[in-house]
Length: 419
Image (tube, rainbow, N blue to C red):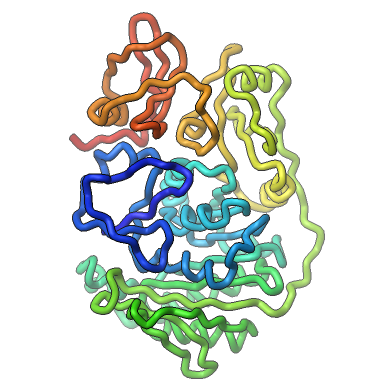
């Protein structure tokens, strides 16, 4: 079991459990036992993400390829649900923009939840097919494709994956992977980076795809300098000798995984990008927002449905370009809605990394925090009105304290159901 901590939320998570660092990921840690994440308020607050160690190798790839050159980079995580790689990318490209896409609507919902809890404003979640990105040629500096695959790398972790595996499915997945890459590669900039990964051991889904990228797509394979002590196996494709990296559970503390890295050397013919105008809040709505939470520097506001959201001003034109061609589920941070001339703050604001030190709050103990996350009745001391609830300084969400009761505003669909 392993977690990756949120570098922008300084909670001392799982401090009662022994943790050892994962060598290839700055914020990744192995746990010597598996706790009940369901009943850990820090998990629900986005203070860490439970992620498979092998998948965290992307952090090391980014260090090798980008280093500290992250400012204003546009990043696409194409097959993003449930959100492990996207939250990692948001942490690495904290001064860039990360677009997290998921084609399946039901999986897009859990992606929105996990991106919301991670709390960073440099994020957009979309629900689109890969070919929809064709309208954004020569656009992204980095595209990550963690492709749907036959799943043989999960045999140790999930025995049911063995029963579902077949050679026909391997070939089906391989063809689907080519179609996905063919659709998305025009959106990668000249000199842009493609990170392709699977949880499969099959050559047809790994090295043969690398050969196809090098031969048919004229991509340039990039070799990553990996320490021998990590026991990650370097492989080379049969035709072009493109380098890939294989993770075997008997050699590393992680599940089966394959990853390869390419650079695009040719530009795609780009045209002028369309832009969709954002709906702006009216003056009265902005005044309500400002009275509750003054607009932070460097942000612009817009409305999505009835909600007022804020977004980094430097990426506003990009948001308008994406909105013209994609279905956007979420962008930036939802601040709240104005209803009958009063402001109702959003849960996204509560769990965001925005500064909330000037807002009223109540510090809870762990038992109270779990009761709040279960949406149970609470009895708390404090002034009436909107109030943040915190555990050891980490924000969990909102309550509204009334003279005779406390209204719990934790999202009902995210509440803890387990007893």
